Length: 245
Image (cartoon, rainbow, N blue to C red; front, side, top):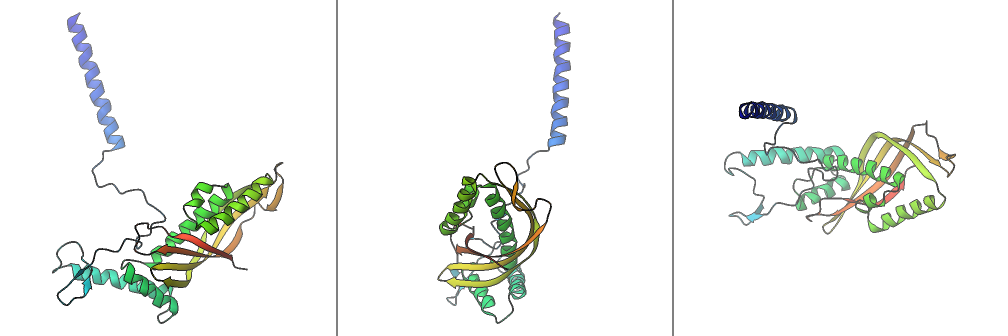
């Protein structure tokens, strides 16, 4: 009996090792190099300003990682050239918006307006979807207090009539910066967004009272986002909305 028991144990052990190796090959293993989940609201350029120090001439310089005497100047110049090109593309050189975007760089040297536009588009989709679903929790983190109160008021009125919204966000056709303002270290950037969506409002019995569930509609909104530059919070909040006719 002991010999049979020992052989059985060996069989089970071999089977267990085989299953473990199969699971490991399918699921993989952590290496420490995995990328973190992407935050759609934290654009690459919206980082806290790096610590500055003075050089021999008394000017502030931005310390970059690595050997400062070899490749750092080149890396910084390439990054700066990329940002300069992005600013000139989203706002013509010499325009007020172009000047304000350059002022933002004084607070956050890595701010890239193209990345901001991408983040604004992602925020727009999330806010539109949350409003349609009555998701107050999501809206709270994306809107200023005043705008949040307005959105929640509209949701409350809709719910009091026992209406629901069926909404499908198709995508954004175009997004562009239309205005930039900077007061102290508080920036406001206005973005004109042209999007496509399907939306229909239904009453308690399911009858359509507004919109069309089979029709793709084009909408153009002008939204203003604001943020305190240099703060630990990378998120821009929606502070004003306007519909373009």
